[in-house]
Image 1: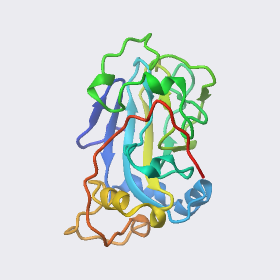
Image 2 (image 1 turned 60 degrees about the horizontal axis):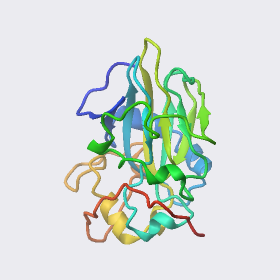
Image 3 (image 1 turned 180 degrees about the vertical axis):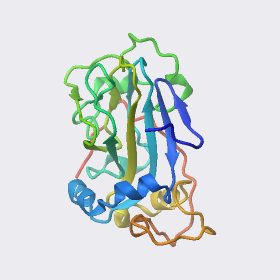
Image 4 (image 1 turned 90 degrees about the vertical axis):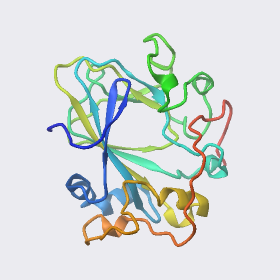
Length: 239
């Protein structure tokens, strides 16, 4: 895959290139939206954002982190996932070529690692020593060695990272992010997400495509909620 165009989000050992609702790549993946909804068990699936994740050759691990952004909100502690990510791999991955590693159950209850992690997507996470706990293997982790064309669905709150990528080629992955139950999310969360830059602007013409049926709608006030990507040191979700 050629290097994607557009403004990228550089983070240590991984680059995220944003995708918008009308990008051809988004439409291509979402042609299978019925299957995606079934795999997620979604009640009201809505697409929120997307990225191409690029891991360069000979790059160190991506630190342990989670992607949820509203830990001050009570919805964070409900058992159902407020957001999920679909990771579609365009390259084979192994333990030596940037494979995903996850901590099962870390979306539902705190782990010792939560107490010492830097904030996800923050300056604090740059320049971490390779021996820092956020960079190394953890007890009970699971490594997902995948083939090109495989896909993984993760809860936004799940702790995850990658192994180092020792190969001479890039490791590419398309990440599409969803709200699996849009109609039951709290109004303030919907009011925040509806303003995501990946979604159509209020004055932007929307031509019917595969994606348009999955675009969220919201009649309430737009919100700009404070971001908190730091999970509590101790937490447990409830039903």
